[in-house]
Length: 182
Image (cartoon, rainbow, N blue to C red; front, side, top):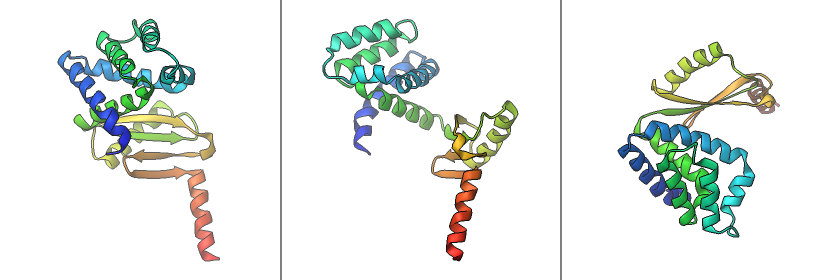
């Protein structure tokens, strides 16, 4: 187990147990995804919370003001606990671990689809069917990303499996094939 997981796993497991006992798991998971997205998009927030210069009480007050209306009371208490324990700077890692454990417990596969442009609803539905076959499960969570550098097509990763159906991937493979021939 990587070192970071030895720190994050106990917090993630304990919080999931609390959410389970309060029958808030689905709500907490949805809130965790939103908070993780906000945390990653707002480096000022994550940097401030990780700063050893700010006092713990100041961090807890800021968390209260920012998230009291958006999060369940148990989630807010969890954030304050992380602040008390000087672990709030690791919030993104804790939430990612929480989501991993949640998916493992419910046998949900995580697929990341990176496409050259936004996928339409029908394209997403068609791709979902194909990914379910590759993943071997109907329970699937899809993370959609757009990367214009792919030129066209898409790249799908499910666990350790990667399907590269992008134009840039095809060009790269063609270049490797030509290099072998020469």
